[in-house]
Image (cartoon, rainbow, N blue to C red; front, top):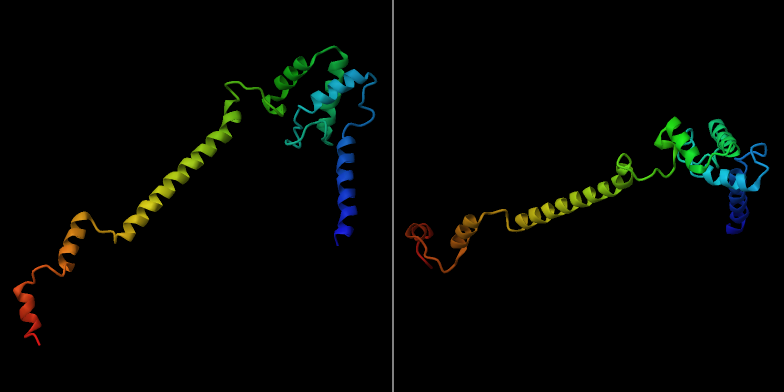
Length: 173
């Protein structure tokens, strides 16, 4: 059975790699290998606005293609990576970057997941402490200190019996 799955898994893996490589079409590739390498590196940092969780370098969406062409045009025109990123951010917002810069406005994006994790842990600690306290109260019968003392006096075998209790018992045999 595993022998039958191995070729299928290998074919699937190769097709996924081929699909990623084919996102940049041959007519998009620049003649200058240095500019093309810069374009590919920059395209890997820009989010596809259609797919949203994929870079434009690996996206097959038409908008991703247009952004890849725009990046290449601006590189040929002499813009550097920071200028191109600034242009894209001014046009599409910080969301277009897969890794937004750390700023006051993006602090929530950077620290939000950790804050939610800490809040979740605090809620769990409070919940389990309450559960253990409730369990301890149930184990003691849920009686107050005064009630426990009274119960102890009533159940104490060495305690004095009231005369009324002896009358109810009747004569001892």
